[in-house]
Amino acid sequence: MTSPARRSRATEAFYGRRRGKSMKAPQAAALSSLLPELKLDLSSPSPVPLAGLWPVPVHEIRLEIGFGGGEHLLHRAGEAPQTGFIGVEPFVNSMAKMLGQLELAGLRNIRVHDDDATQVLDWLPDACLDRIDLLYPDPWPKKKHWKRRFVSRINLDRFARVLKPGGRFGFASDIDTYVNWTLAHIAAHPDFEWTAKTARDWRQPWAGWPGTRYEAKAIREGRTPCYLEFERTG
Image (cartoon, rainbow, N blue to C red; front, side):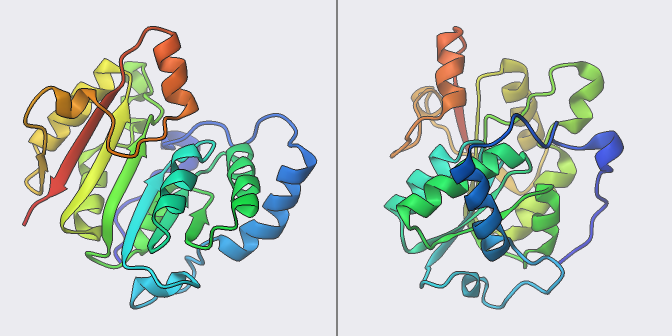
């Protein structure tokens, strides 16, 4: 575990508001009952091996940052029951929605964190993850807010530390400026390599992609999603 500088919630948080409209009763109940059980305890050292976080045997470990309504997280966890998933989502309503669906699905290979993802990244041991997904993150479109974009040199350093050699970082966005921003940061980082060989590699979703509500909205509004994948080299 390392302790790089963290951003202040008051000035440079990577995410926006924490709460939305009143939750439906089943979602509120799932939040109340499941969050205490599934939330990572960052006040204690991360377990060795990290697979001990889950009550079922897992052979791979993935992190999804900002899972929104949980469509992708739940789909991937359902198709890969021997993979342990850590989902991070600070927006309370989205966490409640995902937990409600998780309860119905009966999945046991998901753990969660309801605050800043950098807290999880700094808590994790070295070279423990097989994949990190950052899907349709807030683009912070105003230039004065670009410092809040999650893709940055310091966060790529965090990714490089916790990913295994050969591990993957998946990034999806429909905002051209953020796509270009990410490619520029990857190109400047010594520990990552873009895996695309042809245009199809970034135009087509990854295998098994379930789609998300953010993606559907982007397509409705005429924006083209982009799917980037990067390998942790070394």
